[in-house]
Image 1: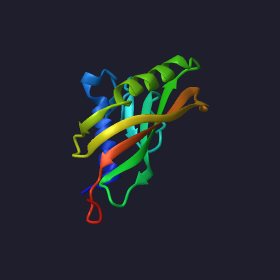
Image 2: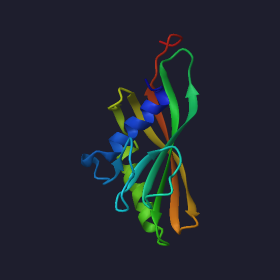
Image 3: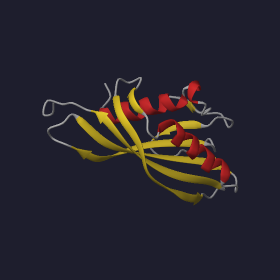
Image 4: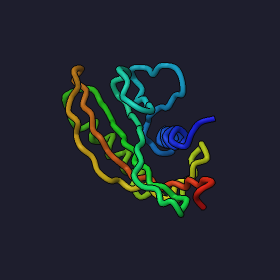
Length: 149
């Protein structure tokens, strides 16, 4: 059994990897990515592959009387090379898929009410000359509990 955050991030990773979204990214729950794949990972960026999308979550707000919570989802994209355009383009593609999305039920059963882009920033190049960009989204999700309606 997994928790809400794991289900949220896994569901978003599966959603981003759907061929219909056109991102051409791959999400695997186990095993390594090939050098030619754009891997989607949960948590921190991994050493490989060079092209990667990392998803992590942080709390934003939860009303004690309502069943919806706002969860921040940070998405860091990385692309090899000194040219900033590929990493910016990948971040833009993710924006086009997620920003303004409403009424989405993820494969993990989490119900998303709305996703809104909140902020972002270039993170520069790492020691292997791979550029990273961060984008933060506020995800309003249905999260009832024994203490909330």
